[in-house]
Length: 220
Image (cartoon, rainbow, N blue to C red):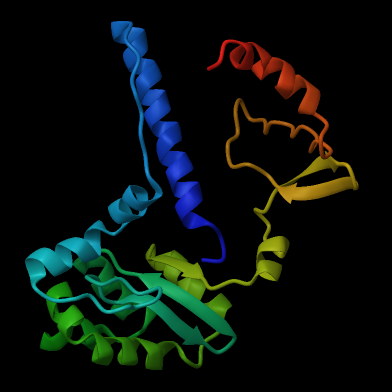
């Protein structure tokens, strides 16, 4: 991922739990004791492979950006980049073959006629999809997928993110001068919130010591 997924996901789970506790307090007048762990958060994210192992009876393989129980779902190389295609149901599969890949017979092949069969024959299915896409450009393929309303995502670099038309940045003051960061995702009443300055080292020491002084005096 390149980011601290475990830390971020646990913080987001805590945020949701706190909101639920506030709603509960508003209805009942009672507070809640909330406890989370980094382990539990990522274990919850692993429920699909967990169920595959526990009830399917086999250890899921590491598939990178692929999906262990859906096919085709993964990265395919194009003439000028890579794309992740995500097929969610049989209707989408037939549309992908007929309209995006130009190969309607693909969907009728018994080896690929259902998701269960495609997962069993993943290597052959992915190879045929890859063959159909290898010589085509990102612009051509994404236009076809948009027209067919098939979910996809481009495999992008950080430079691609910086140049993306939907990337929004906000200024933030730092002790070393102004910086520009990607904006938080929430937009309220059509507006993004402004970001406060990054404090200098030790800037809030006195305020924090004053806040905790009564607790220290009480021996807590």
